[in-house]
Amino acid sequence: MTELNQAAISAEIAELHAAYDRKRAAGMPPLDSPQIDFPPYRSSVLRHPTKNPKLVDPETIELASPAFGHRDVAAVESDLTMQHAGEPLGERMTVSGRVLDGEGRPVRGQLVEIWQANASGRYIHQRDQHPAPLDPNFTGAGRCITGDDGTYSFTTIKPGAYPWKNHLNAWRPAHIHFSLFGSAFTQRLVTQMYFPGDPLFPLDPIYQSIPDQAARDRLIANYEHDLSKPEWSLGYRWDIVLTGPRATWIEPEGSDA
Ligand SMILES: [Fe+2]
Image (tube, rainbow, N blue to C red; front, side):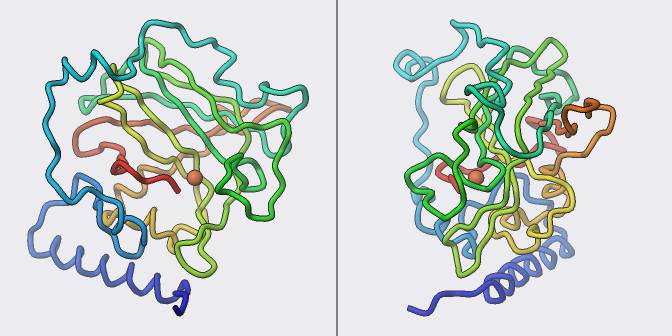
């Protein structure tokens, strides 16, 4: 089998985006949900559901599924640089923002979980065996609860870009995975936050599976100097909007890259 190179993938992305732009020009409203089948992101074609969602009684399912809200999360769990005996390597940063509803109202008391690669772009995961070093002082997972004004905040290390096997020479732009739990597992939302100015954006089929440029831009954090702490960390701000026309793009179930 001939392995596809980046040029072939980029051409597929350009073709799909041009088709989307033509439909928009012809009057189609912007897409407000993820495309679960985006062929340049190869595995999306194989693993998305092929049948309509099965509706379940949410109250019944919540009796048996994991739920959240009974135990507090310790404040220290939002600092990914304090989980081991030593300091992790890399660029220390603070990521903060607000979880908002479509009307701009804060969503308080929400469990926000993150996971990410280390500064070298390596995950502690059996499936990640590429030759970048693990960091014995960095696990790459943290969580916190939003405050009364919807604010979340993490201290962590800027993750590195990493290769994946979608096609030859495929690299993911640096990103942090975010999960919002809702009030039960059945409401969980998952998305990714990116960093401004990443040269890999045009090449990444996951980022580009969002056809709308404005929606793609909403996944990119802003560098905010007032959030940076002198002699300590760089500050990035990223708000998560759950509903409405400015909603943060949420991944279809089953995405894991
Ligand atoms: Fe990732």
